[in-house]
Image (cartoon, rainbow, N blue to C red; front, side):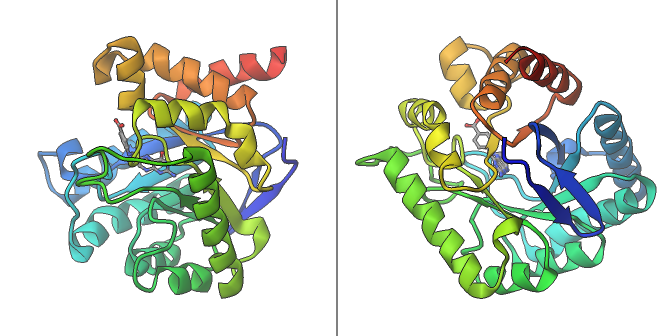
Length: 276
Ligand code: PT1
């Protein structure tokens, strides 16, 4: 493994063995009833459970990036995520990350106590690179071809591993030039973001090539369509497929595994760690 510790604001993240990042969605479809208090309390309880189940990071996102998803306004995204970040920071001793591409959200989330920035745009949005640097927080740089609304319409690559690696290398260089420290960078090939099943499979089999870049690698494939395409199962039936994938990711050197089903994944990774 990487043997690294990443400083996430006031908390340390040890990456000696693979850790689990739990997904906390705060998009409107995840809460349709009740007021703000309800949202915050519900989110806190979910975060509490994921933390108790062994997640070391809680990833909070106010804008869906699933294929076909539309973007949301800055103010809506802020209203959704900020109270939740603040509440979790006050109530739980756990690292939070903010899943956003917007500079303003990064800054406000940092003020509210977030420990990490997770950006599916790899800091390409206006002002994002500067904002991330100003927060002093670690960043996860993810590869995406296109944008969520249209990314799954016939994505093409001459050499998917080379192109994704080259993209990440360039984004790393931009970060370093901006003053973000090497020790604060995490990379992610971006499973399902402008990729066919064949592209996802090739990238997964070549996880080692990403580790070679010398940064911790995050894998996010929980319940994604690549699992549905292989198993023929609907989203609600993808737990076993997700666990198999997480186990393989852990064995192949992923440092952080982003999942919905924390308790089950933590067990799977413990077994992988003990027996490999
Ligand atoms: C991810 C990720 C993310 N995925 C990081 N952040 C999503 N760092 C949100 C499908 O094919 O992999 N890494 N933030 C969720 N996005 C998707 C994409 C969800 C594709 C589903 C699919 O089903």
